[in-house]
Length: 424
Ligand code: AMP
Ligand code: GLY
Image (cartoon, rainbow, N blue to C red; front, side):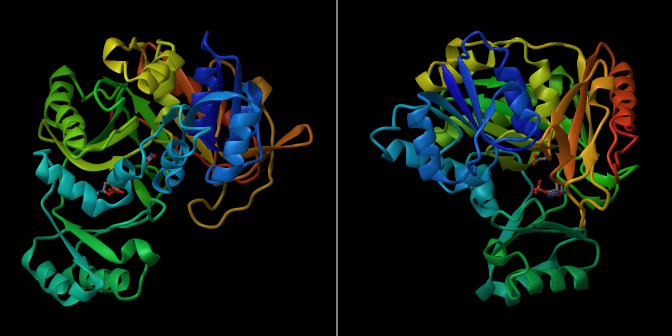
């Protein structure tokens, strides 16, 4: 079959790399893709949310499966667009419709959903602009730290955690009254602070059956020792050593099953990934958030651990037959170390020539922000390259990734040399 992936990051390169190994694949297209996806498929210069152009491509290339990488096209309704079009409606889309995408698109929706369906999560209250005065008073009644979340999509920046009530009140005012995150902060969720260690669990579902993919932990801060600004993710590890069988069983029983059942009860026919951000609160899972897509850079450690043919799983999602499938996993540890542009997550430059690819051994080099420039590869984003390695132990995998991270050269390159530091 011919397959299309929407997106342009490391997640999409990892999907492409995995799909390219499938017996079922005839031709792979990525829109818009990057210099890495071009090594395993055909890039097409179409934005991931340009629905009419995507339609033309699907018809022209006889594409029979679409995998949506980022959340944006899902929240904008790419799956609904396919279902509403007589020529596209039989092409399966991996990714929920607008109704399901609200799990990520609205924090308030996802909190209400969790409370209603008995899924463990922090207590919360939500406030609109008109309710600012109430919100300010409410902050005086809860204990610090204060967790404030813009309701809508805010490019991963919409969560602010503050220790001081005055700062929290100022932040709430900035979000609601001064539209700090634009339309996304026209409503704000204030949440109880959860203590514990974070990890993420990924589920693929056809709305009925599901398979649980390998769990992962990512490293969000720019600085070593988890310091400094938040980023899209500086590295990831799977499996997560502290997530043993017992904890994962609780996640399946208390979170995964009620989530799938809850979606069904709400009449949401959900086909795609559910990314569950969790806090391990003394051995009990608490849900921090849902995303309606795979994580990045988590995909760069999850895909290498899947032994099953991923297109067979996606095909089963399209046919509503996922409950007949089992997923086979690699028990080894996969790690990724993200190389980023100097200055990221603040201002950074693009277009830096990258060299050293051919000197790397024993790692998978997943391109995140790169593009081809003639026969050179140049940087094209803040997060540039995910260096993933799989080995019997985390230590060996990390040693490979760090060795290869050193060999790739571009001006301003930075990476965290302590990925996994908290787990060894
Ligand atoms: P989110 O965008 O919801 O994933 O939030 C971003 C980050 O903020 C999470 O990955 C957590 O590190 C942190 N966070 C969010 N909600 C809470 C909470 N209730 N308690 C503690 N930390 C939180
Ligand atoms: N790495 C976190 C995310 O993809 O949202």
